[in-house]
Image (cartoon, rainbow, N blue to C red; front, side, top):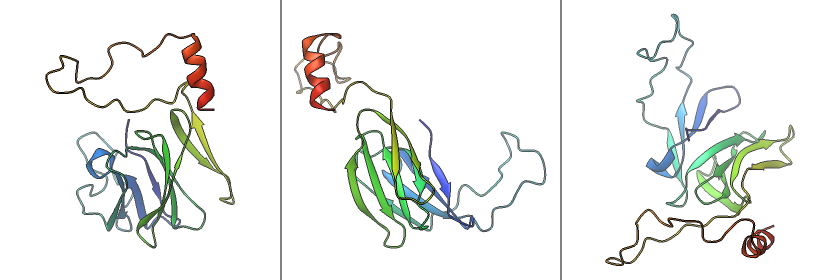
Amino acid sequence: MGFAGAFTHGGAQYIVSNGDAGHGISVYDASSWSLPSAPVTPDRKVMNVDQEPLFTIAADKETYIQDLVLAPDGHTVYALDVARQRVIVFDLTEKKVIADVAAGRQPYALALNADGSRLFVANIGIFDYSLVPPPAEGSGFSKRGLRVPPFGFPSKEAEKIGRAHV
């Protein structure tokens, strides 16, 4: 997964997810960025990506943002946390998280209608997976988690779990 980003209206600032380094979003001053005067190449920077953010807003420590959209109001950011299967709502004016809600099974992308009154979440999964805690020290189980699925598919167990999370 890569980083997600969006420019504020007018392009003066750039909002970007900061992956597992900050578990939230960072806002950068983009007013000094300009189009390249020469072709972009892998060894040539287009903008100063080493600059410090204007501010950062952290969410839960397990958060990993896959996608984000800026609302028409210019200060509400909807971010898709794929690690916890949630939509996190950030307020850029207050510089804080204002909501954190379930996003359904394996959320993948967000879309906002033109007036900002409806947020759409695209989901790609069948099941609502949860984090598996690491095994007890000395138990002999792999720290990588389950070696096999917890139940067969199709099966009565799979159907029961699927219906429970619809």
